[in-house]
Length: 75
Image (cartoon, rainbow, N blue to C red; front, side, top):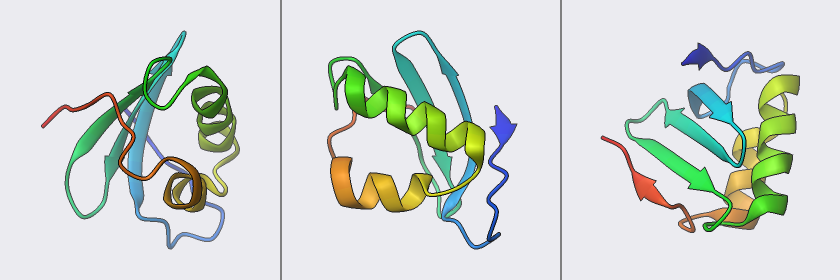
């Protein structure tokens, strides 16, 4: 996983990794989650990948649009 480089440094996200159709996100308060084409869907995953690369808005996006619609908890 690579560190999430938040532009405002107060994100709840610590790190992420992604590949075609999926993204794994590790939150600072614990837990790593998989989001994929099935949950929450391809459009959301693409936007989450874009935001992760930009280092801006990923935590807000998850809170507003996907919340608990993840594929599974990894740890």
